Image 1 (cartoon, helix red, strand yellow):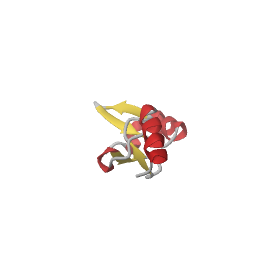
Image 2: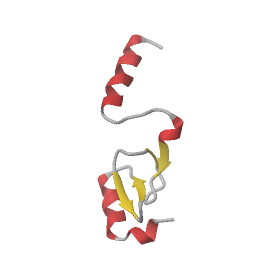
Image 3: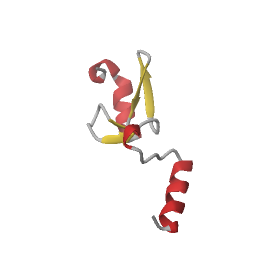
Image 4: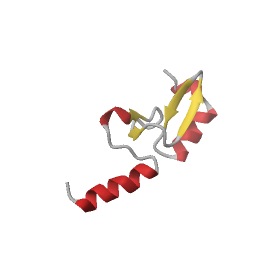
Length: 68
C-alpha cells in the first residue's frame, strides 16, 4: 500500500471512518450500507446507524416503524 493511501486512511480514521467489514451495518430507513457509529440514534437500548441526518430524523419521528 502506498504512503499516500496509508496517510489518507489515517486521516479518515481520525474522523470516525473505519474500513473494516465488521464495522458495517445497514441503515434501517434507506437500506444503504453504512459505517457503525457515525450518525446514530438509540431506541429500546439498541443503537441504529444512518447514512445521513435526513434518515436519522425520519427514524426519530417514528422509530417503532423501523426497529426490528
